[in-house]
Image (cartoon, rainbow, N blue to C red; front, side, top):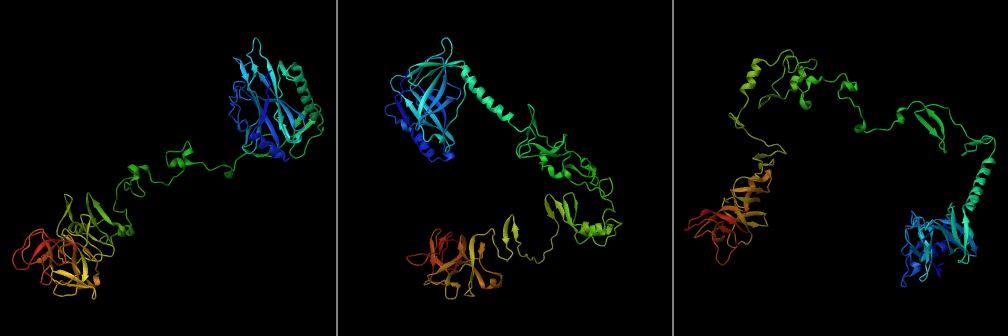
Amino acid sequence: MANFENNVLTDNGLRLLTRSASGNAPDALKLTKMAIGRGIIPETTDVRTMTDLYQRIESISASGFLDIIRFDITGLSVSQVTCLITNDAITEQIPIFQVGVYAFDSESDADVLYEIAYTRSTPAIIDPPRPTPFSVELSLVTIISEAENVHADIVFPMYAGSIRYDNNKSKLAARDVQNAMDELKEISDGIQNVIINMNDSAVTTAGVALSKSGNTLNHQNYGVAGTYAKVTTNAQGHVVSGQAELNSGDIADVAWSKVTGKPTTISGYGITDAAPKSHVGTAGISQHPLGNGTAAGFSTNDFTAELKTKLESVVVDATKVNVVDSLTSISTTDALSAAQGKTLNDNKLDLSGGTMTGELISQDINIADGAVLKYDGTTIISDDGVIRSLYNNDIAELFPRGDDEIEPGDVLAYDWRTDSVMRARKEDKVIVGVCSDTYGFLLGGDKSNRDKCLAVALAGRVDVKVTGHVDPGNILTISGISGVAARKGKGGCVIGKALAPHDGDTIDRISMLVVM
């Protein structure tokens, strides 16, 4: 027989033992199961930190653990727990170097390794059943706190025979099934005594629904026998009342997608005043039936006077004519007259190949607030009258006019004192651009002072006044003539880059790329 000379309380075991010493019921020490291990614990392993046996044998039972079959208080702060090992499922010899007991940890809600007994020399040996299986009881002395605060999960086994190690761990004593049967009989007799001692009268105490008559145990009756659609129970689950039919409040809301057997017609839902199917085309598009008839199409009497005044358009093929103000004071009994039809036809615009043809009479066009004039999706004139984009050249900004003689092409300088522009002179340092009449995008300005402002090219191509010899690519600056540019020498501000040549002392306009 093995001598497990080492017995160690793990760190988890010490923690549970310390907590159980408080005496609080939730902190009671509860031993739950045992296990065996076949491995020799390495010398370098701190056994106190182990959370499971080293090479625990899982094939010894379905759970991999052994049930506690007996728990005895053997001394002050010492107990003995016993498990049962059966070899009927073992196919090869198994050495046992470790025995462990586990306890329940309420903090982690799990069983943890509480104590380990182990040897590194002579293990216990469990052999396969040869020729018959047998069971062995294996006990482990455990350290506990006060006995009243220690419990164990005990399983009462029934088995044909077993071998049990006695206290000196050397002799074997027989244990047969009769002992187990005697223990079970004691438990059964105790339960029977409880039943016999019950009061013979019906039990009506709250929470109790049993009565005894002779040796017969009866269940207390509730309600009246029958079939119910809805019942009410008490705290013990007994039916105390019921109703034969369900009310509207008894039925929970059901998603429409879960309803089966839905009708496929409007009449199936009990709707009798809907439009007939023959009056509605594909995808629910109206076929213009009579409101109270069965044939499709309109007749002369289909519209009241009020409906005639609300008629917004008449559609014939792809031609649309607005008749908002034309159809008034028409008799409710007549359709359009020949004269009214001719008036509509004479004033319509013909559609030819996607293009409207006919004479468009020119009139003043006022753009309302929030509206714009566009061409091919591009804004031409905004609702404040500013030209926003054209197929021209430069980008310009409106500046207040400071010189009434300024012309398109003049080079302009800015006077911060008057917040205005004037024709630039050679000594001016703040050159802002060229007076433009070719801008494609115009910034700034408002309708109240448009006649007092000038468009000044800030970027892009613009026609500028020049004098003297100029080659394409030459940098231009202000000449000795106010508002006129010339090829740049050593001094002067840069105005732009010439895109066309010029020669002679005359003043002409050439294309220039604005460079500021």
